[in-house]
Image (cartoon, rainbow, N blue to C red; front, side):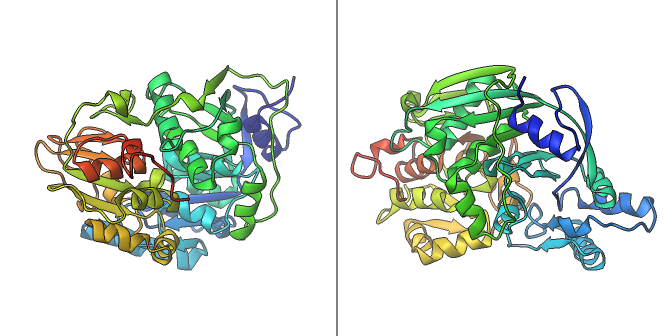
Length: 427
């Protein structure tokens, strides 16, 4: 019997001809990442293990993105220790404002097709957009990786999801990911790998593919992986990645589930307050007022997301009483948006920009704190009660187009009903 993409990547990195779901293997890692939320544990564990050589440090990145900028002295001290550690041990360092870990790793050319990549954040599944197996681990695990270049894994079962048809104008990968959460439920695919294939996936640009893989974390997935194509190869070449090793599933691979979904029938989706898997079509929402809008995060802070918002808001103003914050996923994305004039469009509409990072998304920096009774419409990946530092505020999730349309009208709004009545992408 043939193998899935995940099985092939893990077998190759474990030095085996084949592996099967449920098998435990020790595999070589291609690249590792640790964020500032887990770096203290990583550095502490290395200290406990003594002054050992760290041969894999050169293939490890330390990313200062969650406490960015640091909201208190403790966070600032963590950043100082990360800078010192990186200088002493030779890791790659991405400092405050460089961007979110899941954006700067592929931008920096640190991964390619067929790679096995680990990071101290559940959304490391994003790297599957590049046909790599990316998955989240703990900070102490990175300590072991830096010393040995290896880590153990249980080979996951795989679910194959074929997306047929074409996404309609105003509908994006975000809407697919939300619909998957509505179908399976939060944690509904715990420790599974997802293979997304089909015409609708092939039509996506890289930005949307990263969104598609990113939200697999909310499903509990171990990985989400796409098949590579010329778009993948061109993007990797442009960012200086090493030669790819394209990996495809065999026709006779075994899957825990196979699904075929017509993407052309999908409308914009939203996740309702406090529940990541309480998903409804935006057309079913009746006059839900919003006071705050957030566009950004590792899920939807890329250039195409900012373009979507600019398309909606060009020449217009935010609704009275609505505030909007935009957090680009990286410094490079901010500069690209600046060159395209998108920053000016959104600023004139009434939006404010934060430096690239995760702090606004998770409420660490307290730069977006809604008032009691406020409703936030956000492109983030989670809407847990109290996530933005106020348990008395509600958070809804949607695409960048849906968030911008809602900020424009003051109510959760179908983006297809704005911009002259016919929504068109800015791409």
